[in-house]
Image 1 (cartoon, one colour):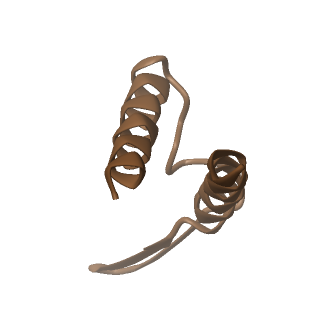
Image 2: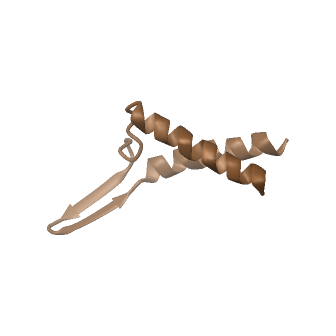
Length: 64
């Protein structure tokens, strides 16, 4: 349990550092935004896929 919490903290800190460095997480090509009048729908498809791949690789690395 402790190792998992440390991993989550490291991932969150890493994402924060990337955002501070100017990486546009949440505004990547492939993220969808639909605006119709006062309604806005945002779906971060590319960002979600990228984070899923990175987290999967990290979890596989830490399980060894």
